[in-house]
Length: 457
Image (cartoon, rainbow, N blue to C red):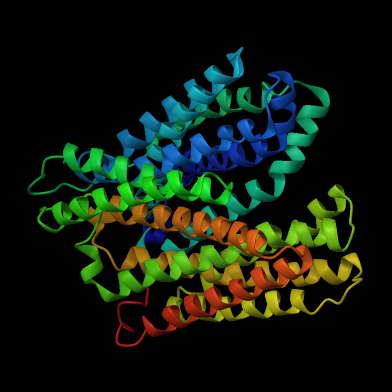
């Protein structure tokens, strides 16, 4: 490993990235579990408590592309460290909150820190890992996300059983300090550039307004908010988005990386990513309704049945990363989507009274497929972009994931609103998931045609 330039110092630098990545992912799953406890303490409704999740995700979505662009122009390292400081400080602020309004504001500030970290994470991975083993860095990201996703509910339950919800945020503070000092010492600086375009503040503001309005409206649709008002908000977001897009096409280094979309492989990779996360989120949201309401499993059993998916992804991701060092990552990602589809179809054929083990191995098949897909797909996306645009590419990759997850949640909401029978609604959701996964697999394979040389590491 040292022979190709990967030193022990770089191993330690990677630890800083993964610590904060796990913190940002855990913070979603931990708060999900704690929502009823927080709602009870502050004497608020369950629907109001969901703002704890909404504000965090909304702020991240609004800021991902601006902070990624800032990292491209100035410093990925400085952007990352700023995000760590903001996230750590706001975690302490969350723990110190004595009313719900302060808590929501602190969560919004946490979203700022998380956006800074997520926006440049991929760019820093690309600077740290040599091209020959870049896939291993991507796989480590996917594995850490899967571990945090799988362990989140268990960690939250364990903490809440012995301490107050405040500790869900306090645990971030020492981890944040550790990640900051490691990153300050060991993270690499941006490659030198001949020219440095000025940061486009107008585009940044337009981006925040457009994504804020659109995702706020979509979130309200999924929560069955007022149809007329939400439609107006969505229309306003789309209208402002037209002028935002027009500005990007005339900019030297656009905030929304429209210049990268001239590369057909990159464009199809973004479409592939959106379709895959729509499919994943539809399946992950719909299945608990099937297990709880149709199969009458307990909440604990349902949680355990959801666990094989992220565990399988965690195991398969590093294997897929090593495999694509010598094989075509686009084809590998398409094969992963095919395996994912097989897993969803198998879940559709479990019968009316399946045993737990019969569901668990099918969930694992879905996780294997997604593990085979996710890392190779990320590699294709990164390799299709120049190094000095790694921040914008990484930000767009995270934005694609959030777009897919939001559209997946909205799809489930629409299906359940249209179909009164919950079991039938789940079957429809899973069928829609298969359709989007087919699209993801098809785009993944098509983008490899004519790009075989670029796709070999």
